[in-house]
Image 1: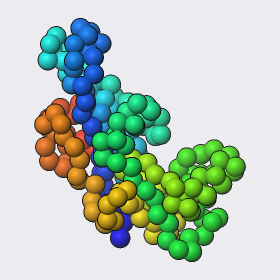
Image 2 (image 1 turned 90 degrees about the vertical axis):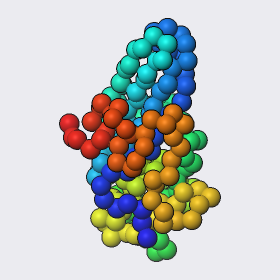
Image 3 (image 1 turned 180 degrees about the horizontal axis):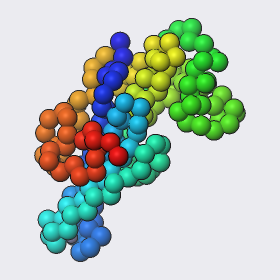
Image 4 (image 1 turned 120 degrees about the vertical axis):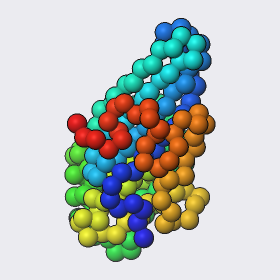
Length: 182
Ligand SMILES: [Zn+2]
């Protein structure tokens, strides 16, 4: 069974970091979201001291900042991509290349990682691969490390209490990551 094979998959993390305007601790909310086949990321900041609110409406694709990615991974744990037994190397590599680009060598290395169960990423990243593989006829799974497969990615930390519900992070999403496309 695959996780959420269509629609939106989100990973979010709230954290405190110095406000770029006044230097006090501000609240940050980072999100990476997969809408159908499109990855995007956003960072929003709200400072309780100086009142500044900033939304960094990030890019699409795999250019998520390393710092945000690390936070997402440590907040909700990495998700592993698991190939079914007998998944064809050629087809799998073709899918990996279509998602990540890169040359044949890079793709081959990636494939080896995936095949050995060593490939993991954020939930949206891995679900993107699951969907792409699914379309190619390969029933891969996204497995949260240390958890049983088959659960949806709804469980997430919400330390700021800012994001109730599954569909959107409260009313504070200003970057179109709530599902609208741009
Ligand atoms: Zn501030």
